[in-house]
Length: 637
Ligand SMILES: Cc1cc2nc3c(=O)[nH]c(=O)nc-3n(C[C@H](O)[C@H](O)[C@H](O)COP(=O)(O)OP(=O)(O)OC[C@H]3O[C@@H](n4cnc5c(N)ncnc54)[C@H](O)[C@@H]3O)c2cc1C
Image: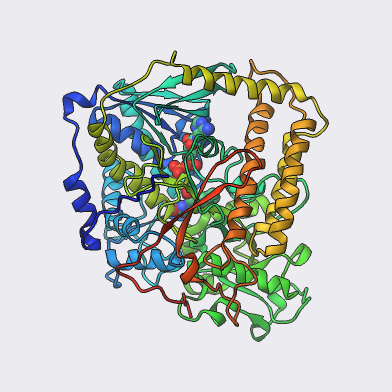
């Protein structure tokens, strides 16, 4: 299999410039001859669609929500990183690059991460020029706060609604192009297959979620910006609609899936409250700027937090990681919370919680400052738990939040299928085995506003406009396959809902492939998943019909994909006989319980090739070569 990451040669800080210099161009008059499909209208998709249309390409953009404005990116709370060094606290492009590589436990590509750090500064300029209302200082300068895994303040934010404000910026840029007729928007439209003609990605098949109509769409290239796969675990902080189907179906058409076992568990979420819960809620990492995390020192101490004296509290992050304290990275903070709870010192119902306490910050800064910084998060917390975090500490626990793995892409963000590009959380590119807070928005916007506009042009300039007709046999076959699957799902008429299967799969994955993984547990999951999948195809009940709005049908298709994808997730975790970042194999840890990497054998991107349902996938390895940084044991002490 052809497998070239196309990383430019030369010094790290000049690679992107060199790449741009060498890219072929499409002249303005020719750009309008090309049509691009963009699946996804979150930050990555909307920024790409708007920018490509602005350049002159014709764009068709798809999302399953009723409006592009409702993409999951809207949920992002805390902020977006950029190496502007406004605080004069020692930040630089190199430091953002290094923090990201180290945060990812030395499992990301150097060249991509350096480019991301370089582009971070442009993103803030672009968004501020669009009118995104970033928080500002009294002087008018943009304000910053700190996020995990960094000792500088480089996170730009708009209260606890950064994603929403950034998405409004990208959305208005997209709307401008919709108004100009350069972008055709297809809302409530779900991509259910990718179409390849002569080995190139040339289109998709969609289902109209309101009418059920199944339609082929052709283009000169396809961009997937379809988000992450956290929801395979059923309970996660992601919006309920987020799913892995677009990426998975592209994988089944030949796109490599990289590092699926790199999943991120966020330390500060509202704990699970019962069996019937369908979603978890994040309390932004930004809260760790001012909140202090602790548990009682004594096991089983169920006194109210205010009656536990200071010397009987264990501020375990500050104790274990004095240099970073409460701002230790997410993987490390999550594991530390689990460790405290496993030790019987967890708080709240079931002992699965730790405190995030603002009392010191309120004493120091006053309630009004805390309200100004985090008011909407405190309101959310009160709505869900009935408690005021101004008066009692929040109770938090780790939950599935983000996925670093995704479709494999090269430096141009093109997958191994020519003409198929993948942006944002859907690709695997920049975060290694653990993403630092506030870096996902940065990556999605870097991909959409600044990388793809260059690299897609090179692809077009290297090929001829060759948009096949949708009457091509490959399109016909894809339409038949999608219609066939829809009919099959509706005809089973079994006894269990798709949600019920999803819940069972999610619990299995959380138990066996969640915060801690073992060889035995992963093997057990790999034994159970195929039988669950078999049962699904015999016993699922999908009510309603195809020709109508039918969310059970939508869900059934997504769960069918999870039942295949879950197997790959566990196979990847089993293959990686080391611990790194969010992938913690209990067999591989240092004496003090930290992740123990094996750089000799596992310093590679694990990119999997699909070989058929239930058949062992083929592993391809992209070696990770570090020219600039030395791989070290990560330390936040
Ligand atoms: C609660 C929460 C808070 C977060 N806070 C932060 C933060 O403060 N800072 C930060 O950097 N990151 C944060 N993140 C992560 C960040 O929000 C996401 O990684 C990022 O927004 C993903 O953007 P995206 O454009 O890649 O995908 P999304 O925003 O998920 O967009 C996916 C798009 O693809 C479309 N789509 C998907 N599948 C299909 C299909 N089959 N057919 C048609 N359309 C499809 C959807 O309709 C949608 O338009 C947070 C995440 C969560 C869950």
